[in-house]
Length: 240
Image (cartoon, rainbow, N blue to C red; front, side, top):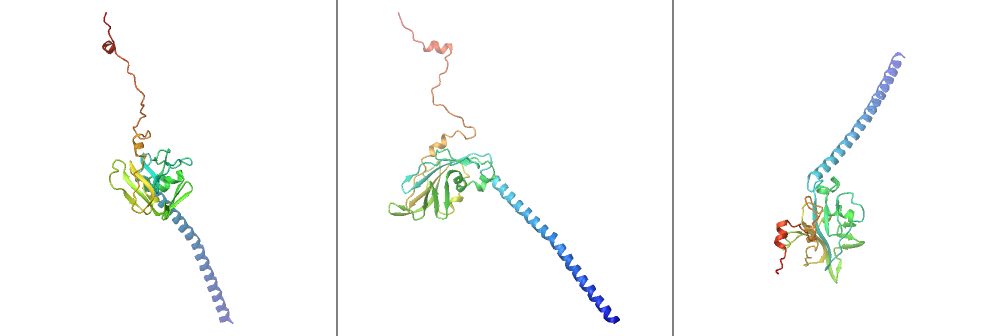
């Protein structure tokens, strides 16, 4: 009986010890799980901040002023210039002048985020895998241009030298960076072999008033008050 009683005590002690160990493991798992969640959150926030910081460090930076002449060309005709559909909260907009005005307010429209797609959020222009949608009309690869299938492409020139052949972009058009001043771009849907003309709004780049250092120029004639000597020189003398 003594041995049996001792064995039972040992078994109970073992069970109690096992339960205690399990409880300890459970108690340890909870704070470890919390620590993992917190660490993951910190890493995500850090990555997001780093991404925003990187975007803000690349052109265009917050405070920059970049202007791009653009046109949307369908088959053989330019569509009317777009206008903002709402308030510009990002810093990429247009004034209905055929110019994309890039003045980033923050990282959401700076650096790598300054794209055609970002601009489109303010002006009712959206992109799909095979084309774009504007004013409620979709233009995709295969669009019918007077009986000919067309393709969607972006044509890019230096606005100061449109005699050179344009760069032609057919993929990831939405991600095109608006990071260079005085570019000229045409978003076109045209048959193969057809190159659209440069945007007709290029001359507007030389008329902008929101460029740092620019001033509004008046075309009205200016009258300079004459000095006494000038007045004497310009007077007409009538002989007797």
